Length: 164
Image 1 (tube, rainbow, N blue to C red):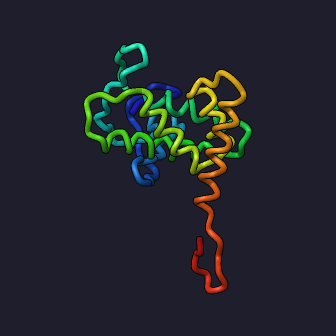
Image 2 (cartoon, one colour):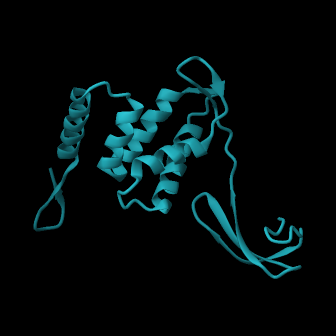
């Protein structure tokens, strides 16, 4: 690992922490003593993405992340939550064990994930992803979201168990 300041290849690991799919390492350059952080993650074999026009391109997790960031702007969703959502979506795609995936299916994975994270972000993403042509499509999406929300809500009883 090269130092970001002096480009020396010599560094020592000060601390390592692992979560579900990433290892975070704090390093110190042995040449200039600057400290920096690196991340290691397992590289999954991802399918090619088939676009609307039939083109194929390599899967790029940064595109999912960018879409989530745009949808979650000004919602209070942390970058950590966004990164976890990207990991979930990437895991769902990798678990399919397929060579190609239609971009529309990836969009559905993103929408399903956003629905569980934040309803405003879900509607924002849906409006772009589904290319709403008029307000009625927007209203239909809101009604569907509201119906799903009501079906998924639980009421607590005095014993603490959930009741539908």
